[in-house]
Length: 88
Image (spheres, rainbow, N blue to C red):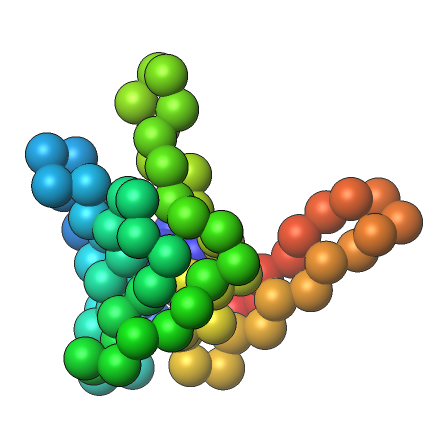
């Protein structure tokens, strides 16, 4: 998303703390490995799953919940082909 619309969002990943901070539309969203809530501007939002790290050290988080924090972004899942589209 950042490569397509860098003016619309920014993020930082802190591997030591296991936190992802997303800044978009004047709002700050924080996601943490092992916690089921995103925190946007101090308000908790429940995710469908808990973020985790793979054995290779790659963070895995619910893309739909994060993309929904970007104003005017739309997320669509196409069951026919098993693809998630983020329109920004």
